[in-house]
Amino acid sequence: MLSLSKKGLTCLVVFCFLSTIIYHHNRKKCYIPPATPMMLSPDAIQQVSEIQITTERILNQMDQRIRRVNFVDKTNTTSAQHSKVYLKDPKNSYCVGDRLTVQVDMFDYLGKKKTYGGDFLRARISTPELEAGSSGRIEDLNNGSYRVHFILFWEGSVTINVFLMHPSEVASALWTFRNQWHGYVDHMGKYVTPQQQREVICGFHLDKKGELCEYTDQRDEEYFYCVKPQNFSCDSLSKVKSWWRHDKTLFTTDQMSLLDKSNIRVRIPTDFHHINVSHCNNSHISITKTCKIGMKLEYPSGYAMKDVWYPKSCRMLTYKRLEEVGTCLQGKFIHMFGDSTVKLWYDYMGQKIKSLKPFHLYEDNWSQQLLNLDLERNMKISWKRHTFPFITTTYQSWKEERTITREIDLIRGDNRTVIILSIGVHFRAYPLYYFIKRLHNIRRAIERLLIRSPETKVIIKTENTGEMDKNFETMSDFHAAMHYSVMEIVFNGLNVGFVNGWDMTNAFDTNKIHPAEKFYGNEVKMLMTYIC
Image (tube, rainbow, N blue to C red; front, side, top):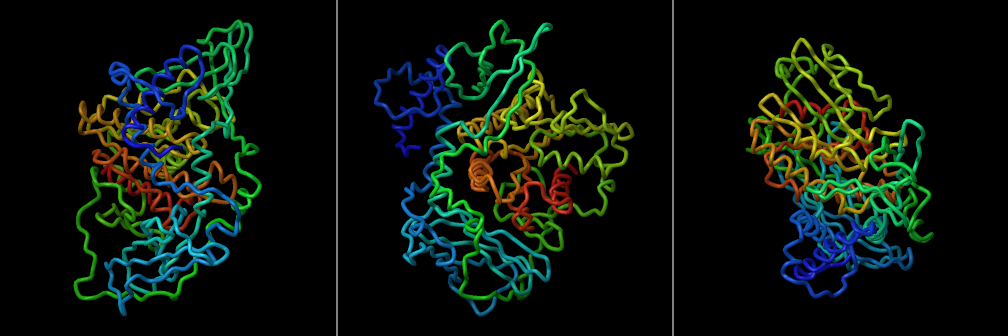
């Protein structure tokens, strides 16, 4: 990826736009072209779309955050064991509600101080006796040092943990390789006629020579391609599927050594054991208002204690059984669009609300469309996958595939309507450009929805923290951290609600994309707080 000036970025966007036009004529793909000097007319510049300009601007913002590091030798990479964490401006005593800052100084395996940033860190405070935890916000000083900012939410002995998830050398490689190819996932399409069927290669980027079938959403600039099978119409594409190619990599053997599990999520030593936090005069954190739509996405956004989530700035609904809020759900139409992490919510609600009954649709795999009906309350809850990229080895119906953007456009909206979105995990194996463009299009659809129906409630879920135990090139939480930052940019100022799975799962220390029910049950409780 290139770091560009505003003028250079404009030229880059225009060049990609013009190359895309050529691509749709010759069926050859332009992703991010080399910065080739060009003479551009005013008419050509005016043809660059708002989607392309916004997507490239955000991509460039993200690119500026990544430190470019050339891997030479492991001894020169960041070592958690040689690094250290210490209190910034330590005090003799701390009060509930205080802000606490620690500094992290990074060193390599030779004990030499790092002079640049870019390490992927994660921070958390905890009190095991209370089963309490909260996230820390990390500030990169870009000189080999970091500051981590915590809020002391509870009283007791508090332990501070800062983890090196990946050294900057790995983070740089993950960013570069993700954005320069499409080789981590393969796609296949099935074309069907009454007489025969044929399976062919599909994808977002095809280098195959010959005729292609192009599936285009011109307004949203979404494109998908399949090799056109001989004697088949492009309209006969019936199903698509995809699968991970974990055998394919751009990492060298030496770089791969840094992805050994022993080098992942390593705790950085502290020069202190713990701090003691007490209730002081006027230090009690008093929260009276209930969480509502329109509150901004924050990190940290709260804390966990005894398997219960406590938001920082508002109160969450309290109930022992989901059915206790059944009156609130009377007449509601709840649409869930996303991946398996929000499908957990759908399954949870179906299990806990006994009056909900499944209406079986005609697909027969885990990612089929799902529908629950409650005739007593005149309520329905549906879940639908967020369409390609949606990586599953079972065939999915192509004709009913629609982006979340198009799904939102089909919803009238009113004060009974709730739309829930979750998107991210399935995009980790693709250049970030696609994720940014999809989120930007979703924002535009939400804006259109709220113009025609400002009473409609929209809730967006961020990704959960993951296992971090294998397939790091495509499943590392580094990619999820990039997605979280993109969400902060794209959805800023939008009148929606957020369920911050990224923060909550770190505070609970789950480290699973699909956490236990007691944890994602808190995500559902946050959701219900917005709905009710």
